[in-house]
Image (cartoon, rainbow, N blue to C red; front, side, top):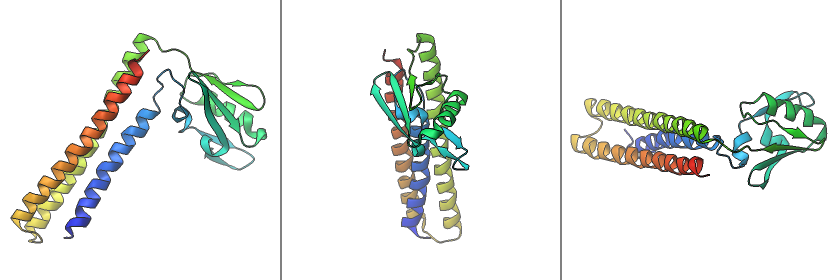
Length: 188
C-alpha cells in the first residue's frame, strides 16, 4: 500500500465534496446579483447544434448590485438564451432589448430568506455526509491493508489520525462556507 497515494486519494475525494457544496451554495440567490446564479444554465443553441453552458456563449456581468446582464457573443442566439433563462429555475424574468438581456434581482422577503437558509444548511449537511463517507472508505482501506499485512498496526493508527485530520479540515471548510452564505442570505 502506497501511503502517500492513499492520503492523496482520500483528500481528493473530500476536496471534491467540499467543492461541490461550495459550488451549489454559490447558485443560491441572495438578493444580490452574482454571475454564479446563471453558471449552471445550459442553452440549446440551434446554430451550434448542441447545448452549451451560458458562460461559454455569453458575457455575464453585474453592472449594479441587483442587476445581471447577459450579452451573447453571437446576437443570433439571444432568443435561445432568453428562452433558457425563462425555463430555468431562477424565477427571474429576463428583459431582452435585442442585444442585451437584463435580469433584475428582486428583493428577498424575510420568509424566503429563512427558507433559503434551510436549503443551505441541508446542502452543508449533504457535504459533511460525503466527507464522512470518504473517511469511511479510507478507514475501510486501512483495515483491509492491515488485515493483508501491508501496513503495521502503528502505521494504521497514524494513518487513521491523518484521515481524521483531513475529515476535520474539510468539515470545517464546509461549515465556513455555510456560515458565510447564511450571513449573505440574511443580510438585507
